[in-house]
Image 1 (cartoon, rainbow, N blue to C red):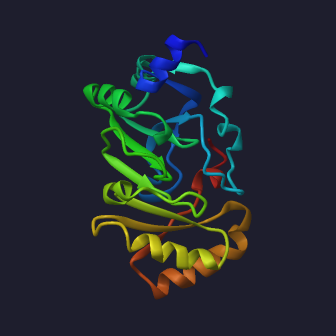
Image 2 (image 1 turned 180 degrees about the vertical axis):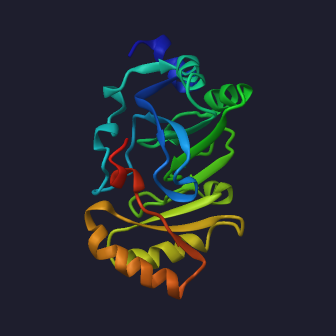
Image 3 (image 1 turned 60 degrees about the vertical axis):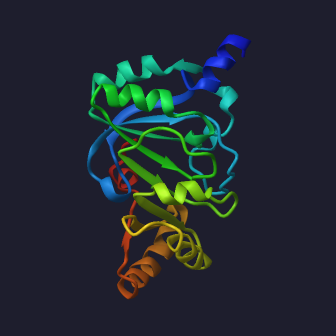
Length: 209
């Protein structure tokens, strides 16, 4: 990457774009709604069950002008979900300002492990044990999405729920490879602890991106 490109990436004017696509939101509070997804490369959180490990190395994904990405969004949708990788590794200020100027709602899905940036209509926080969220990101959360891979993850979920605000919606989601085993346990847990809701990866059941 040349110096000029690096400076633009550092400012968030360019982002390492892995992929972008228009689809149906499959998880969490906005399940079933249409949205344009922007998947940004780069992540060092290191979830062993991550289903997009090809996103981890930002160098594999070409720096793309945020203006170009927003032009693509405008052809399809009025809601964007920026995900990764870990999107907060990069400044989200420029692209979210541009989206909002075009009356496009801004949603993010993040581990919260990096400093807050951007302007968000919806902030989905999905903490990981390997690299915990920064304090500032708990305050921003509209939605807490906890991935349940084994029984100990319920305790971790409760620890994280204690750190978010009262406005935050709480979701438990079975990790896909353990869904047969863990969904039953999640159903039982939510019935005993009704502050939680169940999130499923419905896009995988529907066989869409």
